[in-house]
Image 1 (cartoon, rainbow, N blue to C red):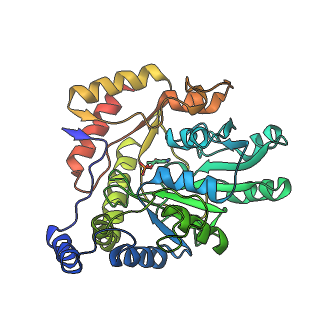
Image 2: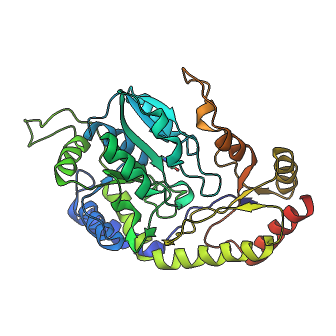
Image 3: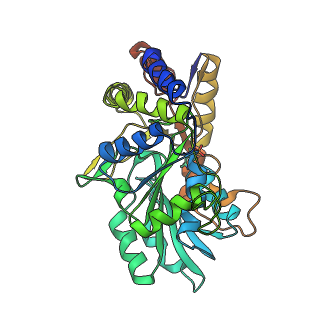
Length: 358
Ligand SMILES: *Cc1c(COP(=O)(O)O)cnc(C)c1O
């Protein structure tokens, strides 16, 4: 059986060495030595300031909204994982959907200004599949209308744009380190804050606002992560170059095998160093996708419809708007299996089944 992804497991001995350290210290959570070591190494590897390690990527989005005092309407993308929209609603804000660019699949800056009202306070955009948003255009709009920008960068670990980490754009970028992500800590996430005052505020929010044992610096939540999760992160981070290279090779093999077909591929924005986080293909119509998917499943291969449905069509939304580009893409897109250890012969087999059904 071949699933869309498989969590990367580092050398068990490397993990065991960290476990022994944890036993020796007796400290298992609450900003322990390994959590601090991971934060320092992430800042160094990614070349970013103000990194806060958290227990998942969803809490990172929630804390980002709180730390920036965002209320009212948030302009967001209809093409992302459901957490991008559900977090906005969870924080009692209103998502306002701007359609996406048909080639990069990121929010279309040209769709945003017409949606701005006096209740709009922020833009929350996703670097979908690790492909950078048009950060310059978004920055201009945000400056002109005094909006905050949160990037859901759950897919964008390690991506650089014009030689600089994509995580340095916007007021806050959030990451997910869930087991299925490119870099993971089993469960986990992080936020990168541009401003150090925002960073300190968010850091208090991560630990219930605790300012010492009996004093509180504002309202907080539990966003902490453990020494065991940090240990996994340290092991996976050490292997990151290997992971990236293995994924790149698989993507290049799919590129060769699927070239010249009617499929549409993700257009990576110019000046980007990509992270090979996903391998999406877009079919000419949904019927072809469904037929191909059924054939793959019959062969015990399970790609996933990332991301389906388009978030502007979620049935718990009060108000429905049309985002024709996102809706069409959501109906026709499939992410192919991509993980360290996926054999070249499997990539060829998967590609052949797809070509047979186009
Ligand atoms: C995975 C993901 C999240 C949620 O992260 P968790 O760590 O699972 O909470 C949020 N946004 C996007 C775009 C994601 O892919």
